[in-house]
Amino acid sequence: MAKINPYQPYQVELLKVTEESPLIKTFTMAAPPNFHFLAGQFVEISVPGKGEAPFTPSSSPYETNYIEVSVAKVGGVTETLHSLKPGTILGLRGPFGKDYPLEKFMGKDILLVGGGVGLAPLRSLFLSLVHELQRFNKIRFCCGSRTPQDFIYKEHLFNLWPKIDPKVCMRITVDRCDDNSWKGQVGVVTKTLDNLDLEIKNSVAVVCGPPIMMKFTTFKLLELGYRPENIYLSMERMMVCGLGHCQHCGIGKYLVCKDGPVFTYQEIKDEPEIWA
Amino acid sequence: MAYYKVKTEAWLDAIFLQAQEKAIYGLKRSGQGLVYQRLREKTDVVLFETRPTEPIKLFFYFPSELTAALPEKPFQEEEKRVLLGVKACDLEALKTADFVYRLGDAVEPRYYSRRNNTLLIGSDCTRPNPTCFCNLHGRYCYPQEYFDINLSPLNKEVMIETGTPRGDEFLAELNLNLAEVTETDLNLRDKNRRGYLEKLKTINASFEHQKPYSEIVRKSGDAAAWKKYGQEMCVQCHACNLGCPTCYCFSFSDLPEKSGMKRYKSWDSCLAGSFARMASGATPRHSRWERFRYHYYHKFDYLNTILGFDACTGCGRCIEGCLGRIDKRQVLSDLEKEING
Image 1: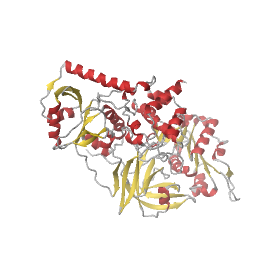
Image 2: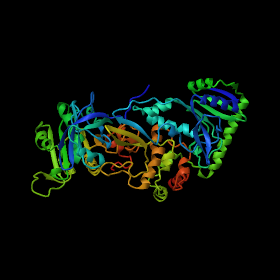
Image 3: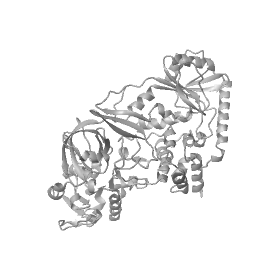
Image 4: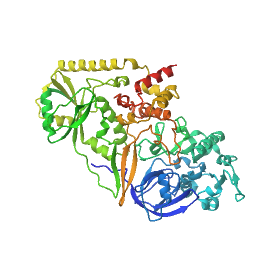
């Protein structure tokens, strides 16, 4: 019997394009029929005839009508994506990989640490947590960006999310600010991890961002007393097929597309080349 | 499952008769090596000798092929065919490809269809190449499993061993006058096989190693041999990837069409600098030697951990094709010497 072709994309319509920062746009696409993903999983989005690239949705998994991805303009596919207008037909495959294990987060303090476009997967996770806030203890969302202009989801970060619930606390920092417009903290994101007011022993940390930020955040978390199995990392690699076939996304014996992209530090700490 | 014997001429006559209707591929001489050809008119066909120059993966996943399209094109089931004279190293290689493409949660439908529609007739490797080193893996140069039928030479006869019900069915279709195999025949086959292994031992006498290859690679770390071979000698021609029967990595290329696109799946090489490079330009393996090392780690460590055996079958095509004149056996020997201090 012939099998389903897992390399065949669905056709989806681009509904909306939101400019988040000079380099990053959020693309809202109609969700294919019966499409469900969980926070942390990723999808492959293609511009027909141009190419395909992996992205982790930034929208809530509870939203079934549409799916959003935030995309930094860094490569061939992303550059074309940035030029597209609503109404364009895109290709979509997935979801692929493992999600954040929310059942393990229940009753715990949760620390989210994100940098740059790494805030995208954390937004999806944050919206999942907020959806069932009663199941979790405190939530600390530490966000970093190079400059104030580079922040994505500005309206959410600065206005909406801080007011969601007393359990939720946002900590926001920028690497640098060349003028006086920024009144908040200046410094790398690890600076926001001092005086956390969390019960570290009953806490999990989730980190997503550029490799160097993930590396130093992980080391800082270990210093603070987080155990390696309670540090969750969203690993980025070049996931081409999403199915464990093509081998582009190998980290040691693991494949990010199948065994990740969510890993605990405990799982991968002894593998080579993890901080690419 | 069962053993028979038949005159070699009778076997070949029956195969060529079947080849009038079925797609049967056998080995013929080409240059200094062997290649597969579709059998039609009766011609010289090599039943035994050695493995062909080309890896068996060419029959199951192509260097580049259409894999998806928008609008979607219906998927065609592959034609039934028979491969004759497949050597143990190539049969063993299919275990790795099966694990990746056929036995996981997500099946590669073209591979699946091709595998299911291909009957594999193996044969003993009676004349190992100077680059063959299956014995150094503890493997054998005659098929012991993963075939539908296997052939061993017995003077002017062939011994037929069926390995699957599908093999039994095909054998029945050949309408051969099969004879029972005697203990003398089995003893002769085993004696012959010991002789092939002796040839391999002689070929590889200087590459004998104490530790399993997986252990050597796992303990190698940043050994100087990686830099010598990977940085100074490797010219990144990718011949080792292309010729390897177990290498299965690929990339997609999407090409625009009038009203959609065509997606091609093409072999890729872990030695290429672009292989693991992400959109941001970051890559986990900057240097050539790191990528060279990864090639070994993938075959001898990572896949060994998952599969329980090396994803290298010792066919030696990587040595034969290497433009940098790197001999995998020498690399592994040097690594062993280095870790032994």
